Length: 320
Ligand code: HEM
Ligand SMILES: [Ca+2]
Image (cartoon, rainbow, N blue to C red; front, side):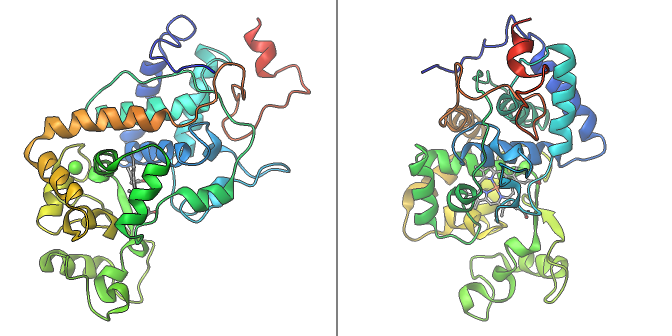
C-alpha cells in the first residue's frame, strides 16, 4: 500500500508543476473562472471512490460516466484544459503523470494563481479503470442539503468540521447557476418567502439576475466581493448574510452548530489562518483512497481507459 509524496515526479517529470501552471495561465486569459472549475473537478473526483481521475472518464461500453451524475451534469467544466495539460505532459514525460495527479496539481496552481496559498502537492496517484455514477449521485453534497447532512458526508470522507469550513472557502472564486440557489430568493423551504438569512440588498441584486420564470442556467459570482481572487472574503460575506448558496450561509447562520460559526469568525479575522487550514484540508482531501503502486494505470487520454490490446499502452511506454 503506497504513500503519496511531493517528490514523486522529481526524477521522472521534474517540470510537471510548471507545465500545468503554464497551461492554466494561458487558459485564464480567456476564462477567468477556469481555476475555480479545475479545483472543483479535484473535489468531485476525490469524493467519488477516491482521487483516481474517475470523473474524467467519458461514457463507453464499460463506463457510465460520472459527468452525467446530477451534481456534475451541465455543471462541472474544465475538461478541455485538463486534456491540454495531459497533451503537454505526454510530450514532456510520456505515460508518467496520472490524470488524478493532474487534477491535484491543477487545484493547487489555480489557487496560487488566484492569490491564494501555494503548497507541496502530494503525488503518485494512479488512474482508475472504472467510474461510478451512482457514487457520484450519493456522495457529492448538494447546496440545499442541511448542515448536519453535509457534516456527515465530509466526516464519511475523513474530513472534520474545520476541513468542511476551510474547503467551503473555495467558494471564494467561481460561479454558480441560478438553479442552485433560486429557492432562497422566492420560496425558501416552501415558505413562499425569501430566505430570512439573505441580506435584503443582496436579495434584490440576485432577484434581478435570476427572475422568476427566467433562465436558471445564468451564472453569478459565488463571492460577490472579490469574485476571482482567492482570499477570505467568502467568510466575511457570510457574516453580513451575503453567502450565495444555502450550504454556504448555514456555516454562519446555523443555530445548531456553533463550531462552524467560530471557525468562520476565525477565518474572517485572520486570512493566514484560513490559508493554513485550507492547505492542510486540501492535502487531506487529496489523500482520499488514492490508487498507488501498480493499482490502476497511468491513462494516456484522461477521457478513456487505456487500450491494452495495442502497443501504445502505459505499461510498454513506462518500460522504455
Ligand atoms: C460543502 C459542500 C459543497 C456544496 C454543497 C457545493 C456546491 C456547489 C454548487 C451548487 C456550485 C455551483 C454549481 C453550478 O452552478 O453549476 C459549486 C461551485 C463551486 N464549488 Fe462547491 N460545493 C461544496 C464544496 C466545495 C468544495 C469542498 C470545493 C473545493 C475545495 C468547492 C469548489 C467549488 C468551486 C471552485 C465552484 C465554482 C466552479 C466554477 O466556477 O466552475 N466546493 N459548488
Ligand atoms: Ca474571493
